[in-house]
Length: 438
Figure 1 (cartoon, rainbow, N blue to C red):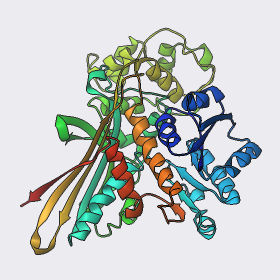
Figure 2: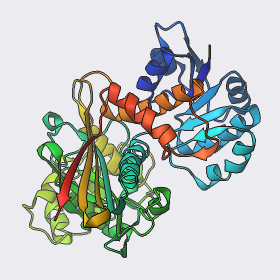
Figure 3: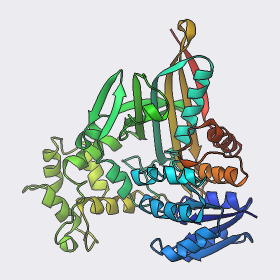
């Protein structure tokens, strides 16, 4: 029987491992063996091992025994894993973006007849596949896509959306907050738009999606490379964006304006209270809430100072960190108040908008929408939509149904058609709607 090595036993691993255990032997390696054991418990084809990411010898031995390796480790470890796979002649799958260092392994992987498949999660992953399904269908009808917008967000389900920021976390907020510092680039009506990091949350707009949902949207990093990735040369609009519930963007804009997304170490942090930390960023002699509002140019009764108070930012309690940055303090406050409670569901929304033009002057707007909900006290929507596409791809590779080699992402019909079909069988469905124009 074929064997899969899964590196990492974090929050998104369980749906993948359970899917693969029905089809292969699965070895789960984690620095915390108990987490790996929990994933394979009760399955005779599952095995858990302890492995630290920097244990090259231990990794080499496990890779040697596998047919396909899946890295769910932090992206910084992927290239080291890929080099081991290259040495041992093993295929590799990750859900992360292709880094320059990973891309440099394309030639050696091709020469060895290996597939290093990346970006096969949700975003990136299902976004690529569902987009290419529409784009290829438009081309098959003799048309071309002239505008493409893609939005994705992981959010609390409506009944769990019970805090003033409209957001919740399953793990550390650090990554979400760091993303709020990034510059964004996109193409809009033929014009390149550059949004500096400090202005990111000011460039927001309202977006209505299927089933009556209304969100805030803002641009996500650099959209321009996707013109070539999707073969959309000559497109007028190319925009990838993030979805959040109303209130998030204006609150994060205020946080950024106060310098609270800085990631430099704070001297003497362990001796500060939360209010003292905030006061160090907002000098003044009045009440802290009033001074914060004044610095932001807001009335004291504006919702933003109220959200700060709800987060506990005015409290005279110890920060509770021996070291860290402004961003670390903020992440701690958010995780304390914005975590999912037992039984609560999350929600994934992925929404594409295309404009397509066809022969004889016909044009259409095409929407593709995925809305998926987590299972109470079970797998989250985020875990399912990130790990199941990768698990399905692994299955296809084990069955010999993928002929691709080199460093790839899932934009080829050979990959996206069977993966999307199997996701549909598992209840993860992108619904398409075509609306005539003119």
